[in-house]
Length: 240
Image 1 (cartoon, rainbow, N blue to C red):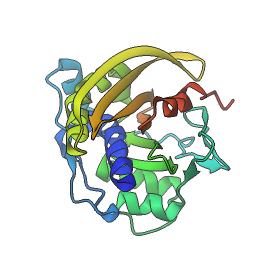
Image 2 (cartoon, rainbow, N blue to C red; image 1 turned 30 degrees about the vertical axis):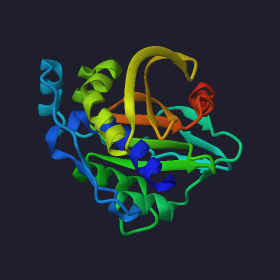
Image 3 (cartoon, rainbow, N blue to C red; image 1 turned 60 degrees about the vertical axis):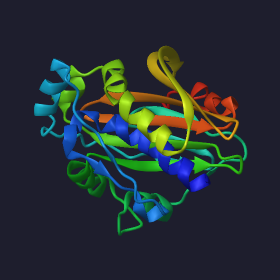
């Protein structure tokens, strides 16, 4: 069950980062014991179409980084975020993250990550879990500078919502509800997608926030059977 939740939450995050890549992206985290993948279709929105045509212009920003985990904190200088996870949560090592992405190597340099994202569209770069079936995930997508300039956080989330609901349904959840609201993240106002669904009498909660910068989309997601897990995003601050 824990692996299914991790895969589902990571797929939700990757679905959002993959929006600007149109229907080119197919994500299959088969190494975690699942053969299910998600295919993200482009939106009919004109601005999304225009961004998709431009998504081949990939950023080569020398400052790009996939971030690092220090103790129980995820840090990323490129997106200027610092996110401590809840007590009891443990980050997966590079081997498990690589397995999730179906990568062969267990160490991924920033240049290798860029190359992989150019081919795959988006990648999971970090995730943490606890014994209560809660998870925190980080995914980064390469969309191109023009795409991230044209798109907004809200448009990306709205365009991926149907795919996200499918992920919940694939996990066996019913009574699914979603909402998009503004929230404070790293001391700034950002769009936040909140989702809930029920399975066997238990309500699963998830929240997702994405950041756009210089051709890249960073997606930060939390989820679990307790709404308390969502405070992880509330505790995010700027790194610098």
